[in-house]
Length: 259
Ligand SMILES: [Zn+2]
Image (cartoon, rainbow, N blue to C red; front, top):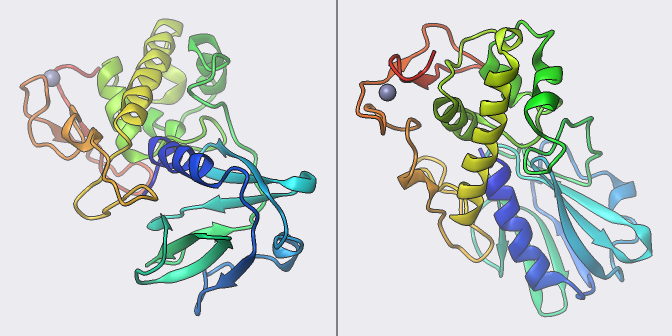
């Protein structure tokens, strides 16, 4: 599932390629997404010019002329490609010579959706030890589930939450509210470091999900993980999986380095 670094990579390519282009047509795939793009979101799209592309959590927002915008979410398996071709087309935008295709095998992606209430942007300065401590202190959920809750921190999913918890030396199953101020400061720093490094590498392309940027380029972070997708941690210790699933799946951690 694309997380903040993958979505940010897509954003950068789209902004570079589409800024200043005018939408000349759009088309829905047959079938389109499970949740059909709302008519109101598509009205007035043709003739609008792309003024920029923003990201909020895992959402992409095309900023259009006339104060309009169009929101995209890649869902579980969505891919945005520049140029035609490819299977599972759910939505397409034509901007003169440029074509943006939104492919999605599992159809959980969305176009024209409203943004839900989202938590802090982890790469912004407002996200830090004290703000994370305030957000977590009353929560009994496992820390990993809290980090993946988009209303608390926007943009983290399984890979980067797993990696950040390892970097901070914290076990994924610990109650979020049990973290001290010092733990939260370490964790906020680890989240920023892991995400920045993944953005710099163009995100992660896992064997089973095959994320690619809009120009078809794979990410490089999957080769740098310390825990995710490994049996032995980067620290050299054998990894363990949590006994109970967290946010629907078991989570890897190092029983020696994470407390
Ligand atoms: Zn270890």
